[in-house]
Length: 571
Image 1 (cartoon, one colour):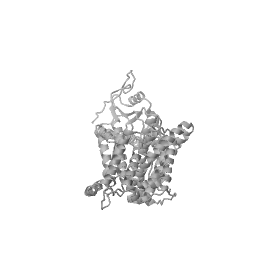
Image 2: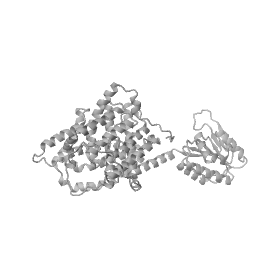
Image 3: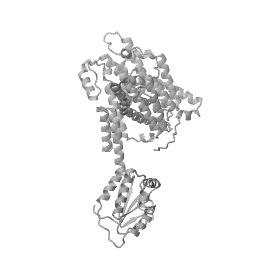
Image 4: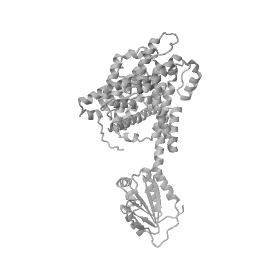
């Protein structure tokens, strides 16, 4: 992680266009058309499930998809609305309305841009895998639970609660209102999506299912026993091909304070999903993603989309892999996919009104199944108990509470786990009497240094940060009679933080009061720079900071009283 103020941002599109040729364009054109067709039903389904209109879902895929491809740091990433955002978007709309969603999305975009500018893309990729799986599995179950009413054609007389347990209580209470024709449409949609890949992997299964079910419902309408299957037109009326004009956002401090947690959740979820998609794409293509440029591109997309009434945008793994499978290798394919969706939006929008709601519910049921990663979850249950616990906790937080709480506590859990693992790998040893210089190295020549009475050596192996600094401080306090010289060997300390510096400063001050010398050994340049800036070097004196343990022991022996006995150490 580098906080250098120099901004190194260059979209992949600019890099790829320098060596672009007609062969690449043909491949990108074919792939872009296929991905656009595949993205159509998903954009509509995600829009409706999120609590907005099908038009909003399409507009998000068009504008967001174009900007992600044009400004991002991955050659094949396809952006748009995704299933991961359904839960958080629906919740924001319920609590703050469409205006609140627009403001939260705009703020999330700014956060993503800042993450990219401060070069934090690489850090986000190292969020523990159990937490990522816990998020996605929990979101998958939540998406599934939101589609029960449309899938089965239920007709509850009450509003569906937003919480998971409340939803299922209503579902069980109104199970007798299931509409059989609607359930058949939803079930056939799922079966077609499952069977199509076995017939042809290149045909968009979701789109085929939607076309077949739409035609079937259209011709069976009015037939006795086949009524009651609701369509998009029944819910939203006739859809018009009208792109909304850019509109301003009524931002004020009160709204910012209320929506900041939701914006942070959207930003973190978007960053995790887009970089995860980019990593999968890199493995398939052999390319490498500029993670910081990718975050900036994602951020700009989320800054712009709200002005057109859109919902959050991120990289979509399924659409990205479809792009790769069909030969797309540059961002031009993503741009073509956005143009294809725009043409569909302009010329075929009224036909979308005939699509059955149960059919879209079936599409989302399959999306949630694919997101669940149940095979991965089953495999991870064999991992260490700590990882399993993190997975289960994150999953339950996502399902039982909401995604905002899950993201915040999940990231906090990730930090705690990181600190714990670093502390487990950082040791502090107390040495006396003699020391082997070659210990812990590849040197075959062993040089034994004899340590005089009254000299103690403490070796820190690992980062000297706040957790270890406290551990070191507790060890020093637990010692018995004080020595004449304390050598702190720091050859394996890669960095020291402000708490480590503070504890070291207190140790030096208390040691001076007790007449105990403190000598530092093996300090690297990075740590020495921190010690110089904090005044530790001037406090100790240059001669008390030695480059090697041999020099440090020699100085300590000369300071110690060779005739005295080593005072007893009480553990």
